[in-house]
Image 1 (spheres, rainbow, N blue to C red):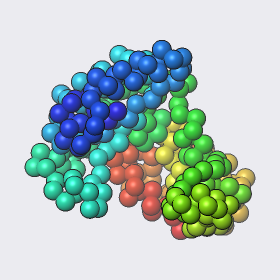
Image 2 (image 1 turned 120 degrees about the vertical axis):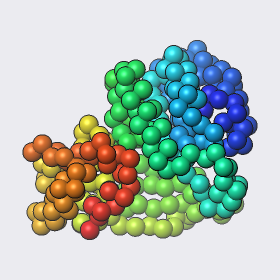
Image 3 (image 1 turned 180 degrees about the vertical axis):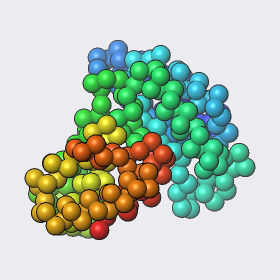
Length: 253
């Protein structure tokens, strides 16, 4: 959906209107779907506190149980990256908009359970929770990624080649073991703001030396105010949520 402001949608070349997005949500509810999610982009050209609040207000008045808020990123060689609009919110403005969105959604009764995701109690996205908890999944189709039996791999992106022989269309296969797997598990778990990284869980699954090395890196981030530890689990601090990528990458060995 991304926005309920038609001008914002046009500025990023979306082919749907706000009315069409609303109609799709109502149609999904009428069809009997019990959990409906909507994505909102923060930092769109011309977006203001007022227009963002109008989008969020519109959503929480609908049968929507889950809202994802993603900050706009300019991908290489895209029209927005090649010709950025003059009214594109700055990084600081984008951060302010994210904080305002977070506060608004929490005040409306949604739980900020993952860095970019908010849900009505009991309506967290089970599909994504599986990713963040390190679960297995199988990707079907060209360029789809999988995580299975300790291996991460991706199917070839070539559609004719994949159709011709899908069983032989795997590339970028990687074994996930030892400290590398532990570091990745830690990063994914820390994205879950309430759950965090359970230290007893990782002690039960990884060797003591690797866990102690990880805890050393985590404790350094506590000293800088980016993490907290209550004796059972590490969690991201509120300031760290806004710069989570740069914080979490420091956890890897």
